[in-house]
Amino acid sequence: MAVRTVKTVRSSVWRNWAGNVTARPARIVAPSSTQELAEVVRRAAAEGLKVKAVGTGHSFTTAAATDGLLIRPHRMAGVRGLDRGAGTVTVAAGTSLRQLNETLSAHGLSLVNMGDIMEQTVAGATSTGTHGTGRDSASIAAQIKGLELVTADGSVLRCSAEENPEIFAAARIGLGALGVVSEITFGVEPEFLLTAREEPMPFDRVMADFEQLVAENEHFEFYWFPHTGNCNTKRNNRSTGPASPVGRVSGWVDDELLSNGIFQVACSVGRAVPATIPGIAKISSRALSARTYTDIPYKVFTSPRRVRFLEMEYAVPREAAVTVLRELKATVERSGLRVSFPVEVRTAPADDIPLSTASGRETAYIAVHLYRGTPHRAYFTAAEQIMIAHGGRPHWGKLHSRDAAYLAGVYPRFGEFAAVRDRLDPDRLFTNDYLRRVLGD
Image (tube, rainbow, N blue to C red; front, side):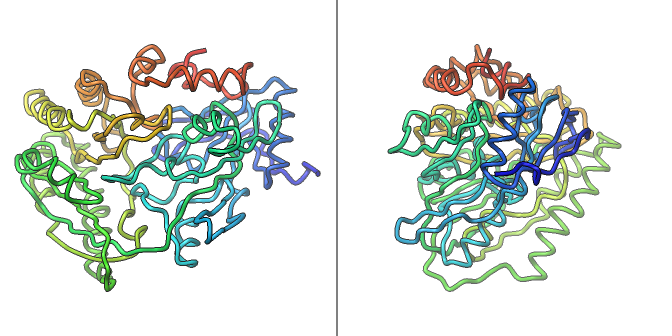
């Protein structure tokens, strides 16, 4: 094994997708194999450099920022194994969700659920708890069947429900605190069709029917447009077909022109002249009309996101969702805040991952956004205060102000994760300021 093939940038500046996080690591490396990854971790430890890995930078937090060694996994990409009989696919950590979805589709397979973008790497998405919406199907991390980690001493550790199960339990959402993920095995199933029904609906009706809408649909989500009483809902359910994809022209109008192009202009105008935002919101909330289409899963679950923004998302007990949303709406209406982005609401079943935002409880996700460059602190702080009053758990990759003392109180298995971390990284090779805040020393 030779490490001379590892690409190294001696000094460089790294920025995340949203542009709100900048890091100046001492060195950036791009290993092309697990063996090379293990060697660069050992070398960094010997040099006294902290180690972090980063994917495509879609986190809004400083979870991957470091002044030590930054590992870019893009050369560790692609399928390493596909077992149709077992219903699994094994991929290298730097594989993008787009590449994974397209490869699975080519083999007539699919993930059971996913988030709404495909630009992330599989390791980055799972490590921070990326999720979609689902009545019965949970986050991407909950679909993991096995993991390969490079730990602090450079060892390569494999884990699953049968092999190192206590590590597996924690490492599916590991925040980069347990080691560098080098490979992931996902459970998959034969590709199926989903019928999506997108429909405008009044806020009060969504609130009144929320539990029914969740119970009656495999996947339900909606957007509420602040300064209005309008929502746009989306219901996805399995279909026997036939496939009836969004038309090329109508899809471009809705997904590119309205949701990205015109919305970009509207956000820019709102940032420059905040007084125009309520009026723009009323127009925007009525711009998208009802539509129904049927397609393979990743083409229904995901959509392009070209307008850059900042985001905070909290997971609250599902039974608290309507109360939280009504409080958030009342806060926006009486505060004088000007909010140009819709609020996104999704759900998830309880899962068994210690640091999953849905760990042990039925969950509703409430995400607030603001256009990049717009002052966000007042709005996000107001929303956060509502969320934490209901035991909210912040998304690990999105903006929040919570620390280890708070998080230990809302995660019953927080101590279990901490014990695994102490075992795998006692000297905190993989720490940074963010992990010190959310996990403690």
